[in-house]
Length: 290
Image (cartoon, rainbow, N blue to C red; front, side, top):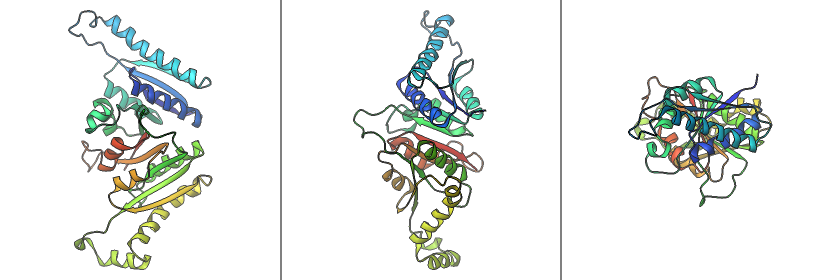
């Protein structure tokens, strides 16, 4: 049975951009596409707008128009559409738990993450247990066509970040694209040094070489699983967000990780993910991991 990419649509430009991206991705991966729109009747102050039938017809039109749009672009794609009788956040979280991937629209570049994503997308992103891709409409003043490259930020090199790397390699393989694996490092404070870390750095020939070896080792099992994916390894000094974004110009997709709730604050999405969602010039896939 093929996998499924689900996309939440609401009739806005950014949700239609997400539908376009999801349709193309589903076609590349030979997956099905599911369009959903969450709607429950909520009486409003305006008598006409408060009419349940009027609201229901509008919601149905949102789905119909999105379906017509994606089937016109990708005629052979298996597409289903469903109106969900629930509030948006719980409905999308339920869909995300069942889908291989959830795509949502992002409102564009901004200065506050809540305004950038919209409150629904942000709440879903914070709680989803499966990958979520945020897509924004193309900027008229932005760069030219994206190059065939998937950029992934490698923060964890101890195996816990495996889901992030697997998603990135699979996305690159589906596109026939190059994968750029990016890792940042900085000189630790003096009090953070230990005899063990000094020994490892000395044996590796210095801190930068040690970080390069750590990145290569983290990538090794995924290189073996996806031998046809060309990989470029980049290790740079500075903050993780700065190094990652400096390697993202024109990329087709950026992949970052997000720790699942537990010891970490559920209200946070992490500084690297936060920066990627603000400034990346391409769709951003946020992949949860333990």
